[in-house]
Length: 508
Image: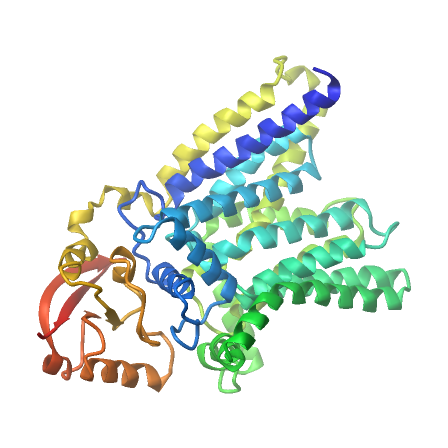
């Protein structure tokens, strides 16, 4: 085999290695994995139900309501095509996303160290991210955003480390990152703070060279790339006369209803205090990756030989990503997951420190051919065991389907031909998923939103007997007894809380 063939073989081996590593890590980390009886996380099931509805001819926001972006529902819809009643398709999606994460992490680490060491360190980097509290149960919108953020980070670090200030940033790179930003905008736009900082620093790199037109042109090229992912959905909603519903359901609801940016929230000083307090708790809850993130970021900002804009770039990316996520005042565990992309900087710091030690003490180098590849395999085994030990999800592997209320209720629901369902009192509990039911009501679940329409409309659905079954958590309106009878009830324990689920069946 000639030298070119050896290089191609090595690349193929490493590519396959990263994909297999992503599979093994996610097999343990996410409850969508077949090692778990089910992923009964309400948010993930809501995305699955809307994606299912999308692929069954219903329009999100107008026919079935949830307030995330369209690519999230599209990806979940593709997962639904793989399996209608399980999260097997979602697991496949998560593995593919994790593989893209790993490739991006590997490329970032390659900027600072040899390929073999980068390969070894990329595995624990991803493992730390998905073992954190912010990864939650698996399948979040933030998880879907990770590959776009990681590759955006790669392009930014690569330019400021290896090309700035001698070369201006290629418009091709600017356009590609505009596309990445457009994808994020159509998944969960609160994460866009990262790409705001990305383009701001890119524009500064033009201005440093006194190229004002280049900065303006770069911003326009970026916006052009960002517009590209919107085009399919503009066509889709325009064709279905639903452009306003798209704006109302995704932009208006998130900005003016879900957050407190409507002028009624805290003042500037109080908001700064709240953000500082939030950062403290985010670090405490996710110290597993902040242990690497914090020294990695300081190394980037304070390390020797760096250009001032290179230092500022990392600081701006961190600051605006955090600000975009939390400035609205809302806070949930999985919101912090995008911040974990900066874990790779800590891994880079570790790798560079290791290479310096190798140079200082060359006699310590192990004289075994392909030692780093062997170490990479050992690292995967060690990492998978570590994820199993650390992840908050692994205790749920011991749960049995027959003990979960969803599968107890499923046996009752499937006694009816073509059953329909309404979920009240909580977000989608998962009965739509396990029973393969496409939502037939716009407010098919109870949203965590201050919208009066939800309770009023759901009570109307019940009064009119619009669905065969009603699934309620803890409480239900009195009107339900006029058209429905109680078919089953079951307790469920979730994160230290006890709930009671009730299944009502339409009277015959």
